[in-house]
Amino acid sequence: MPLSSRGIDSQIGSSWSVRILLLASAGILFLTLFPFRFAVPDNLAQPVLITGMGKTGSTFDQFLNVLLFVPFGFGLAEMLRERGKSKQTVILAALAAGALFSYTIETLQIYVPTRDSGWGDVFTNTAGCLFGAAAFEAIGAPLLRAANRGEAALALFFTPGIVAGTLALYFAVWLTVSFQLQQRSRLADWLPNSLLLVGNDAATHSAWGGQLLRLEIWDEALPANYAAALTSGSTSLAPRNLPHAITAYDFSAQPPAADRAGLLPPISGKPAPATPYDSDDPNFDGVASPALQTSATSLVEALQRTNHFSLHLVCRPAAYSSAPARILWIAPQDGAANLAVRQEGANFVFWFRNPLSAQHAGLTYVIGDLFASGKTRDVVITYDGAQVSFFVDGRRLSRLYRLGPGAAIVWYFRWVRPAELEAYSDLYYAIVFIPAGVVLGVARRNTPSGQIATRILWLLVIVAPPLLLEACLIAASGRRLQVGRVVLSFAMLVAGALWINAGRSIRRPAAT
Image (cartoon, rainbow, N blue to C red; front, side, top):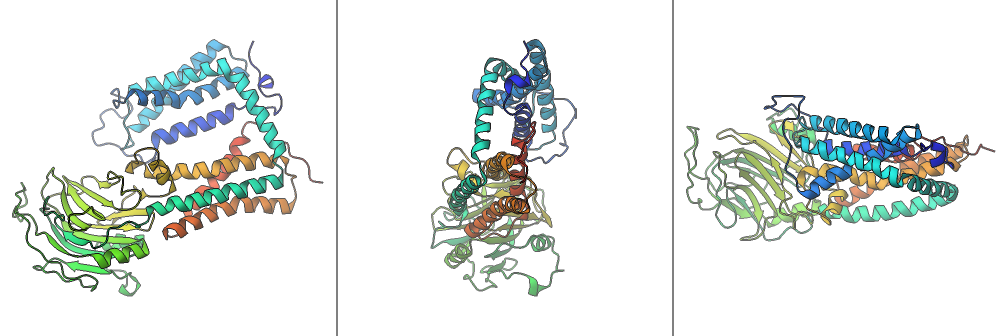
């Protein structure tokens, strides 16, 4: 006998199928298509067809692919059974919907540079959808009855006073946790008594074969418009409106090179051993640049005080070489680096020390295919205490290097991947604000409508927590206000409230 919506949800009058499908679809799309930056690959031969089996994942990866589609199959089965469909129809629909949804995602992944697609994922995702439908047939009715009873009890429990107290405590905990997590992005553990080395490292090996023509360092994050103009060679901005570099070297003359800003001593040193490179550039003499160095203790202290920095490098790279070569190095003699810029083949690689990266050497930022032999590159790297931005030859790179509370949480459980830093940040906001939105959505059912004071109170409850979290993260890192993060917080709160009430009719008591 088909399972009716009345049998599932006699207390609320509607099912969970819409909520489950919304949550499952959002999770699938986020986990498979993030960061939602699409581009047509150069080697694309068949733009609408999946041509391979995809990435070779472990058994655990295949299990995760199955698990990802289980909620979607569960919600789909509930919706169809509520409409009187037979078990056979549900299974066929789950098979078709799972395969079509997964195939669509795998096709879209062809256009996401950081993703791999293949038929193997279609098979495992479809299996997950079938498992979800089977799970609904086996245990769906008792699970949903329990969920409805719990929701009804919460709706009765959440009076305005209890909601206010619960959310106040909830956000107090999250603000405290967020402040501590954001502290892990600070330049708190840079090693003192450091050297600034150009073209080599402290042990005089892995010499770089290119030329660093200009180096400037600020103890603040440069505005985006200035950084873009600086790397494009523009002089349209008036000097009086620009930040002043605390260290500035011009390497066009023979060493020693003086610091025009006067913070550090002149850079001098002995040439590194000659290193041959293959190059088609007639102006390249095949000899590594000198290993120049100076004391950087004052520089390290200045950057730690502000927790911000910006680097401007104008460089002419070496010929292609598979061996890593150090371009810029701030580190104690024979010690671990505080900051490193190097060339690896045609790639530009950047790393700096903070409590997150100090025990995570792989937390680097790589700009692929930046270098070509003899071609001058103009690069600005700017850090605002929580986020690194990169500008190359007048353009800002779209991928961000964001060190927020989300990355700090992930650090405790697994290897942090630089390409996923933006996802960690967005997921953190979802974890903080969607549950609060769910509480507000349930509590709204018991709130009398039509009262101006009530509406003002609800507006304050929605507006205050996102602003407080933003203020907390600014205090911990010193970064600027990020309006996009505040808007994202609002959106997560509203999404939680709308989601918990999706597929049901809200019955609120009338105003008296």
